[in-house]
Amino acid sequence: MKPVRHLVRRVLGPPGVALLALIALLLAPILSLVELTTLLGRPFGRRPRWRVARVAVFAAVYTVGECLCLSVCLALWLRSPIPRWRDPARWQAAHVWVLRTMLGVLLRAAKTLFGFRLRLDSPRGHTLDPDRPLVVLGRHAGPGASFVLVHVLLDFARVPRIVLKSRLRLDPALDVVLTRIGCAFVGASGSSRAVEDLAARLRPGDALVIFPEGSDWTPTRHRLAVQRLRMRGLRRRAEAAAARPNVLPPRPAGTLAALTGAPDAQLAVFMHTGHDELLDAAALWRALPLQQELHMVWWSQPRPQLADEAACGGWLEGLWGDIDTWIRAERRTADLET
Image (cartoon, rainbow, N blue to C red; front, side, top):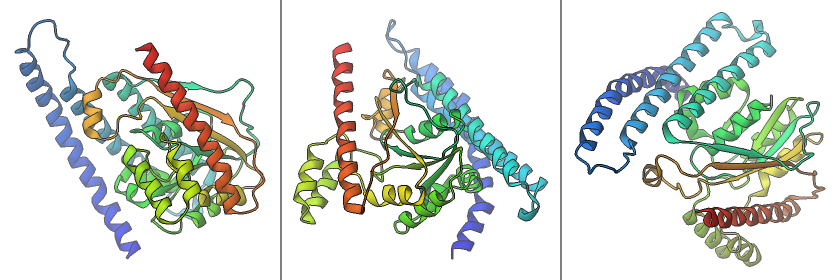
């Protein structure tokens, strides 16, 4: 069944994206004109937010970008259709360029249309060793933050190796580009094995990205995660998770697999806050244009000595406790500034 699904995605995905791009290009000016007409009837002095126009234009940029990305990928395949005749380094470099360009265009569009701003900080003295592969532990929260993290790693001249949920293959451009770069799409099971396999193939300049929480943080997911721990009789872990309301309980299996598979890799932690309250499309719609910046902080983390998954879980809980404390401090600062 998997080859059949793969063939269906590759055959139907690009035409579907092209159709969506055409619809978006037609609707963007129409919706913008309708919004302009509506705004003319508003009381003078109220600053319009242009939310319909912003979303419509971004949808056009996104879908057209997908079409261009797929077109470039097709051209690269037509130039080297037989895998054994390809130069692996040039093949990977070309698709890394495609990914960097695609994410760069989307971020510039988000800055222009949505008011997106990124502030990237790191403790003084923390650097990435170019001669070692990298394992990245990232917080998972907020719309698009994972793509921002990948963009940052690309700016650091790192090739992202990511284990993603298989449903992300529904995005045709991501499916093609990330597969060719060497990322892995997995279902509900088998992710730890996929992580260890990717980690074992890491080379200097590669960055294996792990999200120990497993999914985006939301208050509802946090509450359900605490309940699941209590139902499993893990009372101590449940109490610890309840005391960290801004992060989900980290799952140690993937992190342990990454560290085991890449014993010589450098370890880095990326965390962020600022868009946590944008929990769904409705919240994002109400927030446009964005008032708060996305504040991302990273540091080089000493590799722990972990005997088993339980030890990894305890280490991650301490680390995620520090992240929760930082988020609280950042929110208090933001509240004082407003």
